[in-house]
Length: 129
Image (cartoon, rainbow, N blue to C red):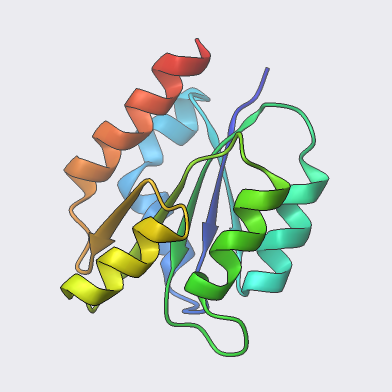
């Protein structure tokens, strides 16, 4: 079974950044990464991957249209089985509190600590193994 991680961010260079940092894991087939440039596209993709193979959603908070914080309760209602980690450049206490209240597993700040993110992903992979 292939397992998916869905990354939601409107910045065009994010896909290359994630693919570079996880190139070994992606080449080895440990997981697949999909990318959505908006919250509505992410909601659709999360609905399309219907089996438990979607193991994690990583979402930026600040995006045009629907923000990550606005998307969070919707994705949690539709896919309560999939943890969501929010990512933001503004890791203030109020943003953290709002994200956690709306169902986020965690909040990571930019620049992303890819070592910490790798630990989060490894924990999710361990749960589905």
